[in-house]
Image (cartoon, protein in one colour):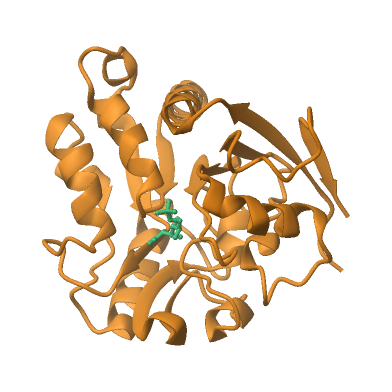
Amino acid sequence: MPRPATVSLHISANSAEVAQAAAELFTDAVISAIAIRGVARVAISGGSTPKAMFALLADPAHDFHTRIDWARLQLYWVDERCVPPTDSESNYHMTDCALLSKVPLPPANIHRMEGELDPAIAAARYESAIRNSFRLEGAQTPTFDLILLGMGDDGHTASLFPHTEGLENITDLVIPNHVPQKDTWRITLTSPVINQGRQVAFVIAGPEKAEVLAKVLLGPYTPFTFPSQLIRPASGKLTMLLDTAAAQNLPAGTTTIQLS
Ligand code: 6PG
């Protein structure tokens, strides 16, 4: 049986306000981690939703980029498409355009998944990079301070897609995952790594997510169909930043949901 978890819902009026809430959550988590441990280790997702949040973090009109001590932020990816970093499909490319090219994050602090390599090699190299930067020993799992996730309209998160082999891998940290639905390979953190995060936050916006979100949160536990259901952090800190459109099929006024 899955670990029980409580999901805290933060529902905003629209996607722009979701991006604002995500930028605030990111900034607060980074500041808090640095204050406690001297470093913040954050893993971010790709797709379209995070783009607006990254733009806010980089925007001089906001104070996020001056509040963040970029030299003490170590940035990782949750997943990556198997394409070169210059490809428009690359999560790194999206992040570089929206954020990395506009803030003083030292290049050594940017831990890119090498999508241009053979998927198995890229996954192994990234796992090794994580083990080194977290100074892991044996079978230890890294503890990210914050892991930001999206959710597809099929219920996938990271690159853990429905009915794919990657869902069953709970021993590795980083894996190549073949996604037949997209006829492509991806590189992704595994669910145990995500569930080890001190704080895990989904950022989900748009009416096209409403139906699957209700199934993920309120339906039976069927994680091979809805992989987002795998995400139940051991810390118990699971947040969903939603807009009203994505949350429209949830009971009105819901602020927390107990996942049994
Ligand atoms: C990716 C992401 C993926 C994303 C979802 C939601 O590589 O695409 O990591 O898991 O979070 O597909 O994507 P949108 O935010 O674009 O809806």
